[in-house]
Every structure is written in C-alpha cells, then in structure tokens.
Amino acid sequence: MCAYLHGSNWESIKEFLQEIGAPSTAKELKVSPEQVVKALTMAHSLRPERYTILGETGVTEGAAEKVARATGVIG
Image 1 (cartoon, one colour):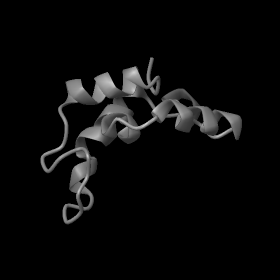
Image 2: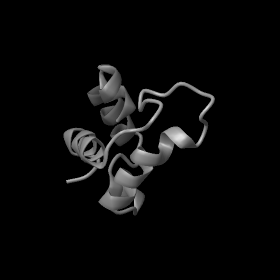
Image 3: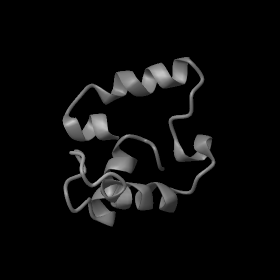
Image 4: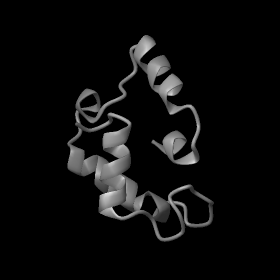
C-alpha cells in the first residue's frame, strides 16, 4: 500500500508476493478490513522520529480505506 502511495509499481510487488505464496490481502492475513484501516491510520505514531509516506499526522480513515481498496488488500 505504501508503494501505491509512493507512486511505485505496487502491482509487481503484489504479483511477487502472490507468486511466492505470501499473503497480500487482509483475508489471507486473517485480519479484518477494519484492522487494516486502523493500522494505516495509526502507523505514523509507532516511530514518530521517522519519516513515513503516511505523514506526520497519519491518514484519515477514508484515505486508508481508499488505498486498501485500490490495491486489493480489502474488498
């Protein structure tokens, strides 16, 4: 999802994960869509001294859901 936000080729990353059998969706990770959104909205606060594409104040729930849907992490 962060590769998507960076404008990188996130599709190739997702394809690679699928090729090697690594999970690439919330369902495969056995987490709920709500947990994915919550993780994105709070991730910036885990290491506040580090830069993240998620910004200094994080992303909104709406933005988090949008990126998770756009990348197919949640349905």
